[in-house]
Length: 395
Picture 1 (cartoon, rainbow, N blue to C red):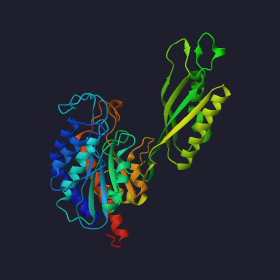
Picture 2 (cartoon, helix red, strand yellow):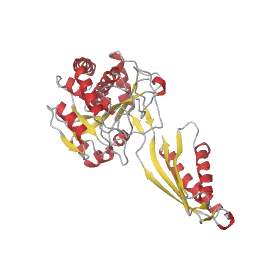
Picture 3 (cartoon, rainbow, N blue to C red):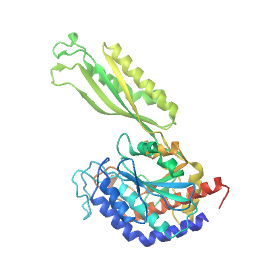
C-alpha cells in the first residue's frame, strides 16, 4: 500500500511542480530572518487555503488532515540568513543583507508540493505540515514547538524532513541510520588578569597571553580526550580583549562551539574545557570562568524509517547514497528525535565551484526541488508504514 501511495504522490508532485517552483521563487525573493517570518508563513498558508492553519512558536504554523488517530509531521523551516545574495537570478532576494542561503525556500516549496499531491489521496495516517520558525537561531524554534505541546495534541508519532546538501552528489538522496548531525553547545571563557602598562609586564597579569594559551589547548582537547573514531569538534570563533596596543587589559574572552555525536563525549569535553581554562589561568596568576550554553542533541535517524525510505526511493527510481552523509553540522530537527522516531534525508545538489550552504551564491536547481519533494513523500510513506505496523495493520 505504501509503495502505491508513494507512486501516486510522485505523480501528483510532478503535476504541481510549476506552481511549487513559483512559490519557491516568491519565498526566495522575500526572505525574513528568524523571529520575523510572519510574511513567509502567510505566503505559504495562502498557497494552501484548503487547510485550517493554527499558530505555533510565535511565527510558525501547523495544520492537520487525514484520518483520526496517529499522525506523521512533515517539517519545513521558515527563516533565512543574514547574507547578501550574489546569485544574479531575476528572483533574487529583494531584501539586502537577507537571503535563503540554506535551502529553506526549497524545503517549503517541496512541502507544498507534497501537500498538494496528498489532497487527492485517502491517506492511511494523518499528515501534519509544520512550518517551523527560527531554525538558524538560538534558542531554536524547534524547542518552542516541542514546549508548546502541539505535537502531543496532534498525536504526532513520527517526524520527517529533508535538507538540501551540496556535499551529497547531485540527484542522490542520503538517508543514513543513526546519528547524522552533531549535538551542539556554545561556550565562553573569560580570563581575569591584572591590567597595566605594556612596558612593565612584571607588574601586570596579561589576560590575552593567558587566553592564547587556553585557545591553543582547546585545539588539542579532542585528540587527547575523545576516541578518534568518534567525531568531535571544539572550535573558537571569537576572541575579544584589550583597548590599546601598549596596555594590558583586565580581562579577555573567547567564544566557541562544541560538536559531538555521543552524550558521554559531550560531558567529557565540558569538563575538560573548564579544567583546561581554570588550570591554565591559575598557573599564570590569573583566573578563568567558563560558561556553557547547551544546545540540541545529535540528530539521530530511526533505522526502521531509513530502511523503509531507502526501499521506497529505489522503487521510484531515486538513487540512494551508498555511503550515508554525516556531518558535525547541527539542525534543531534533532529536538524531535528526542520525542518520536524521526528521519531527515539529505538531498544532493552537488557543489559547483565550492559553493556550499550559507554561501551568497548557493542556489539549488529546480531538480533539487522535485527531488526534495519526492524524498519528503518517501519519508512520509515510510513513517506511515511504521505507524501502521505498530498499530497491527502492516501494509
